[in-house]
Length: 431
Image (cartoon, rainbow, N blue to C red; front, top):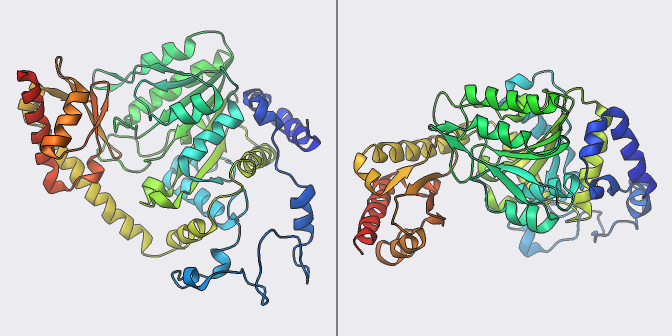
C-alpha cells in the first residue's frame, strides 16, 4: 500500500473506525498524490519560469487558446481553458456547501465535509461505488430505481442491487425497509435513497422521513455499519405541501456514529444544466471531525484523478457566476413554477376515473417523473411501440410500469398525452 494511502487510513480509523470499515479495498488503497508530479507542480507555483504544468501557455502567461473558441465565450480565459483541481474549484465547493446549509436549515451547526466536484451525478455514484463497494457486496435500494445504477454499481463494481418494496397504501413502505436492513448478518450495509425518486417521482412526507431515519438508526444501534447514499439529483423540485423539503441527508448526517451519510447531488437537474456535468459528493457523520472529512475528500479526489482527472473548469466557472448572481433565485423560481404547473395539469387530468380502466398512477409528488401501472392484459412494450407509431407519443416501459417525464411535456399537451395513452391501451385490449 502506498504510504500516502496508509496515512489517510490511519486518520480515518482514528477519527471513526466505522468509516474505515465501510471503505472498499480500492477505497482504502486510494489517495490524492501530494508527491510526484503534482507535488512538484505545487512547489513550483508562482515561479517566474514554470515548466511543470502539462498545459500550453501564451507568451503573456495566459492560457494558450484558439480564437474561434475564445470568441464564443464571455468569460475570463483563466476561468475556462486551464485544468480545474481534481477536488473541484475551491470557490465553487465553498459556495455549494453554503447552499446545502441554506437549502437544509436543520443542518445549522452540523459539521460536513467540503463537497468534492464530480462529473455530474452518474460519475458521483460511480465514485461512491469505487470508494465503498467491494465486488459481491450488495447495494440496498427501493424496487423502483434509476436504471443506471446497474451500470455504475453492478457492472462497474460488481455490486448486485437488492431491493425492498417502495410503496404501500399510497406511501413509502417503511416496514419493507426495516425488514431489508435486518436481513443477513449484522455488519456493513450500503443503502441508496433517491428522493425525488426516479422513476416514480415520489418524495416521502415529513412524517415518513422521520420514520425512515428511525429505521436506519435502529439498524445502526443493532451494530450495523451503514453507508447511506442520498441521490439528490432532483432535490428541491417538490410540489405538495406535506412533502419533505429538506434532503434526508440532513437528518442522516447527524444521526449515529455508525451511519455515514454520502450526499450525491449537483446542478444538472436543479439548475437545468444537463450538459454541464457538474456534481458533488459531500460527507456527514455524527461526530465527524475536520481531519476525518479532509481524509475522505482526499480519497475522493484521488479516485476522481485516477478516473477522469478533473471536471470541466468552464462549467464550474459558469455555475459559480450564476450562483452569485442576484437574478439566480428569481429565474430559478420561474422555472420551478413551470414544472409545478405541469405537475398540476397531470394531477387534474388523472382525476378522471376513466383512466383507471387501463392504468393506475403510482404515488408521485415531486421531481421530473410519474409512473402508471398498466392493467392486466396490456403489454407495456406493445403499448410503447403503438404510442410511437400511431400517436407520436414517447414513454418509457419498465416491465409494464410506464414512466412519463412530464418535465418535458408542455402543460397544454398533458391531456393529449394521457388521452393517447388511454386510447392505445383500449386498442390493445380489444386485440
